[in-house]
Length: 115
Image: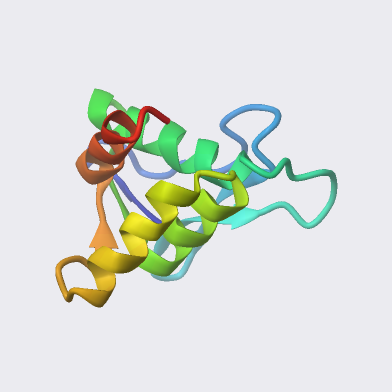
């Protein structure tokens, strides 16, 4: 997942909180969500990390938006046992309708499927 920062923010790295199992990492080409190599990652940790980043993007203070590839989102939903939403993401991609999701899409998905 790519994390697009607000223009006023030079950088952001580290954990968003305990219990996700993911953190923000800076790379040459931007900021990305990364799975922690040590510690326990709960089954819904990846999905909750995506939702947390989408929420921060909606606030607009530090994160302007996020970009999540459909396969990463589908996998995160499946691991979190949100099978119907996971299948929806896969079908939407197969119908050539959507390959990447942004913060607004994540919020809509969460609302639509009551996640």
